[in-house]
Amino acid sequence: MTGLEEFLSGTLRLSAPLILAALGEIVSQRSGVINISIEGMMLGGAFAGFAAGAATGSAGAGLLAAAAAGAALGCVFAFLCVVRNADQIVAGMGINIAMIGLTGALFRAIFGMESLATAPRLEDYPIPVLSGLPVVGEVFFNQSVLVYVCGALALGIWLFLRSPQGLGLRACGVRPEAADAAGVRVGLTRFAAVVFGGTMAGIAGAYLTLAQTSSFAENMTSGRGFIALAVVIFGRWHPIGAVLAALIFGGANEAQFWFQARGSQAMIAGTHVHIPYQALLALPYVVTLAVLTMFAGSYRGPRALGKPYVRSR
Image (cartoon, rainbow, N blue to C red; front, top):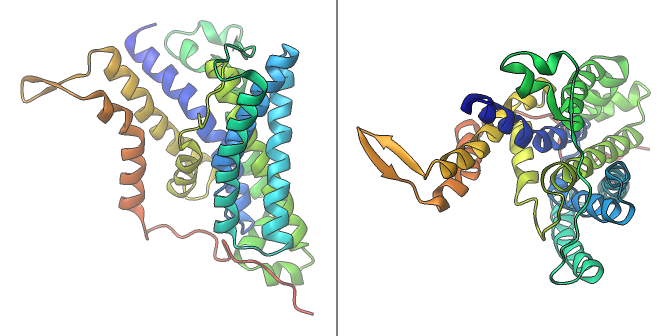
């Protein structure tokens, strides 16, 4: 592959977990529930996928375990915030903190302090004929199956949000009392949306352990869940917008590897300037902070986002 093809292919691979997590979060937020625990749910999915994959020798089993772990955490969050009307921010932070400690403790207990265990990888799946196309073939049609899922899922969610059921879900996030009056079961809709978001976060975590590394490390999500939240805002709560936003963050992440591989040198005003690798590692987070700063206050989410709904008697 050429340098450009390598950069674009790497951008797509690094964007995939952000896209998966952000698409689930869009459904959750469109229903009126802001789930900031997707960082912890991604971590739980990463560990469950790794543990199940290593135990069974099957990447598919690992993927199912990760989805189940994410769904279970989604049920916990939905019970706290939709059924018990707990504060969504507090509950989300609680799950994030709990999963950092729990996954680390379980990993050490099961695999030991100096584990060399590995999980089977989700191999790349080249699409016949299309993968042979010049430039775009290697970039878009020789990827993990989860990368293809990202595109199909974005289109599916876009179509769903325009369907009658999708309009009901969106109404729950804008005017839940009106949705209730129209016959939409607000609580059940929000509960299902949060569980879906948790499932997608779990699969996003599994992408890290089963498609990228074949290993697990404590707190390996490294803030990707929070970046996915920024992707949702930057994408204006739209599935296609979220995909485009995730590609920007994925590109920033790939850029740090690109610069490191080329000696961390940049040409500024005709002079080679050494860029400290610490600055390169911080690049994705700097981009996240810059985007949130630039667009803070200019985007408005669903009107009832973060507000519990209590049905009047």
